[in-house]
Image 1 (tube, rainbow, N blue to C red):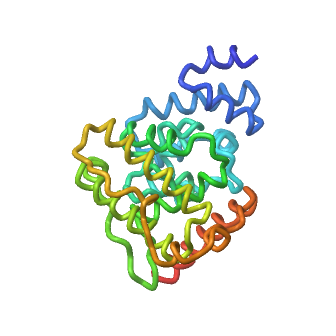
Image 2: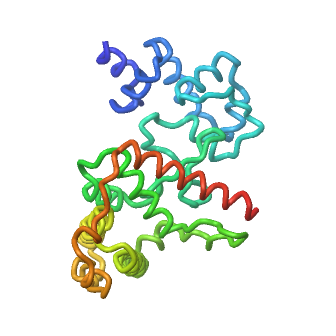
Length: 271
């Protein structure tokens, strides 16, 4: 059954087909959504203009394919939000037009790390560094990295404008991000000791930045590993004091969601 869909909708990746089936689209609906995407790719108009040209039934199909809760109000969409409604469900061709690390799909906004416009070797390095982790662990790490790259608007102070990808991921800024990450980890260890999460950060940082260095052939020189960081608090504390109780995956997911909500609240209060 799936093979017949693949043959008739060659623009869909296997992962996209799986996503559409999880979202309860029938074969006819998958084919219809494929037709809409083909038409969108052939248009010279903007994504918003194309969406406005669709019938109500076609808009409902776009809504279902993107697993949206509310009906699509085209006038309320940004160009980014409109364009991403017409993308592969696997996320492989999502765009971040304002380069802020937050992807708009319809009116929804989602944090992404690595950002969707990062080079392929950066994305591959992150996948390698977080391989085998569950969704909750990975989401928490992504939020940590996102905050270091993009920051959050707090108390009315907006974060600096994001660098374009070719600058963000050059050797100079990879060095700067690594130093920031290690400095942040050193501070955490000084305050909390070697908790399970701090040990995980150390492992992920070492893997991620080492892979970027190898892939980009940059002049990146790693600092002293955070594993060698010595602080008076960690030397004087017992292992029981340095390690917190492991969080369950569901608790981690709740914590990540709460952090996102808190950050969003700060952004709104600062606007």
